[in-house]
Length: 64
Image 1 (cartoon, rainbow, N blue to C red):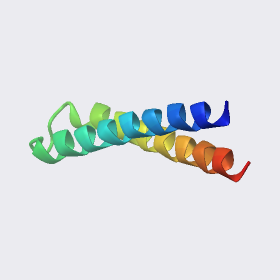
Image 2 (cartoon, one colour; image 1 turned 90 degrees about the vertical axis):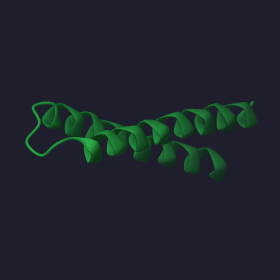
Image 3 (cartoon, rainbow, N blue to C red; image 1 turned 120 degrees about the horizontal axis):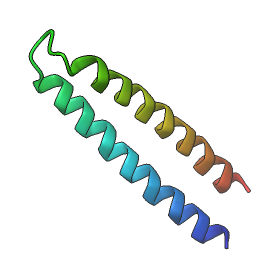
Image 4 (cartoon, rainbow, N blue to C red; image 1 turned 120 degrees about the vertical axis):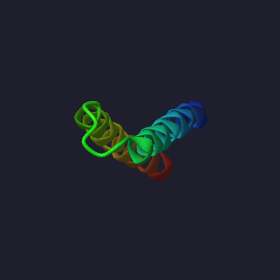
C-alpha cells in the first residue's frame, strides 16, 4: 500500500514540476509589462508551493 502511495505522489510531483517548467518558460517568453504577467506569476507561485508540499509528503512517506 505504501509503495502505491509513493508512486502516486511521485507521479503528481512530476506533473507539478512540468507545470512549473511550463509557467517559467511562458513567463520568460512574455514581453515585459504584458497584461498576463501577473496571472502567470500567481499561477507559478501556487505551483511552486504545491511542488514543495508534495515533496514534503513524499519525503514523509519514504521515512515511514
